[in-house]
Length: 123
Length: 107
Image (tube, rainbow over all chains, first blue to last red; front, side, top):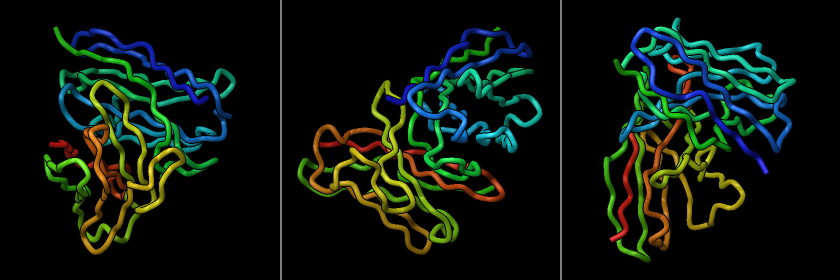
């Protein structure tokens, strides 16, 4: 059974940093691109960042480019999102999601999602 | 950047057919994916590559993509179909884009 479990969320002051983790199991992690998608309270989905299966390609939404960094450790079956210079508008539930295609190029849909980690940016 | 437009809400009676649209500039040139999100739950992929269904998704769910509009169609709607539905595309200038979401209400 595929499982994605996010952790690392919490309350943080504007301008500070936070690192999210996503622990994956139930599939061959290093065969799939992975993504972060966020959802502000009561609002819609926004794609944040994606990373290819071998970390050869990382992509970011314009809203987080230069502030967030996606990475993965295939030996640990884990995905990460380093979030710096956080702003109030970054407040959201952050989901990690798995690409549907083996060794895709970050352009495939997402077939499994975690339950999310809540990040609240407030003073 | 590429923009996807969905109606905020759609209402349908049980047993009827619900159609949820997703508008975008020449959207038919790209593949559209659809997700269902029930309250307090993570999104679930219900249609991908315009009209394919992942395993476990009922045949009542179908999709189409022509011209400037993609459509998710749910036949014989049930109470359990009540949820928010999001369309998604990949665009070379915007990477991944989601529509604003449509709340499906079963009357």
